[in-house]
Length: 217
Image (tube, rainbow, N blue to C red; front, side):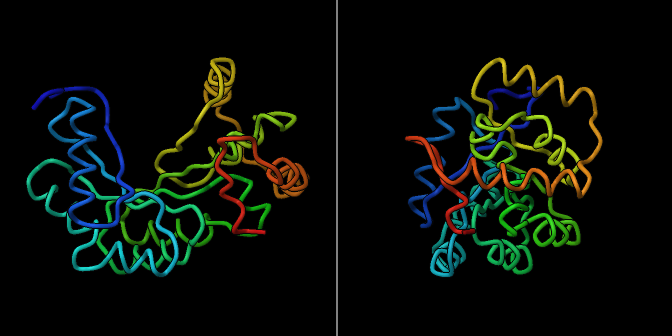
């Protein structure tokens, strides 16, 4: 295998919902990566009930992932979701996932649509790796007074790893500095004080940005 012994864990994703389409996407992804296999393959963005049926159907994307896992081309299967937490809960209960990726930022708490109190406990009970995203509000944190409290909140959520996107080297360096300081959790009062800013900076979106909070309003 190319890349054997590499000191990294490689994950990628497919957004196709069909067996054949997902196989083509995964082949293309492996080719672009220059790898024979990856560690974790995600079904990207589990959506509404119709989407759930397509993903879990007899010729859906999960069938392709199972085939690739059996062939040794992927090690683990994961599902991500931005909006419909009940469908993440449903697939966690019904399918033997290895990993789940969901929003764990303070922004979700501000919109009263937290995955932390619903999806994460179920993932823990099922022995599924829990990964968190949307820590910086899909980039909208650039309009906040500081990134520090948002990172503090998510770093103290009980997940296995946090997916953090940065807009600049300066923001990356600031992020690393905060992480190294091992900041304490935000208090309930601190969280409440940040909710108006959370909502204000996610009421509009710049060109090319992903408005994932649109479902929560």
